[in-house]
Image 1: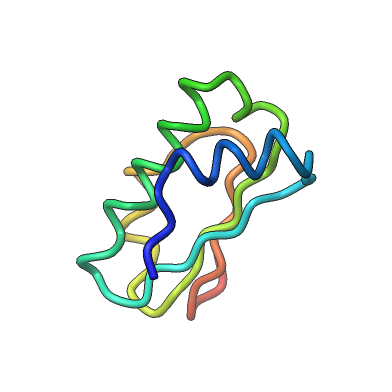
Image 2: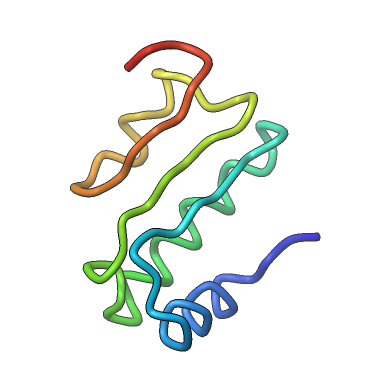
Length: 79
């Protein structure tokens, strides 16, 4: 199921992880990644975690949409 951005924020605050991973299994789910990253930023916790993004539709072509420090992409291709 979809995890709402507020749930990502709450989990980061509660568990204080070193990294947060998100996977897009279909291209229509990729906007959710942006919303989650925006929510982490707005909540002031984005700088506390590294973000890993992966999934079948994640390729080099989407990198400009997520260009920001501390984001790692796991793609089918070498970065």
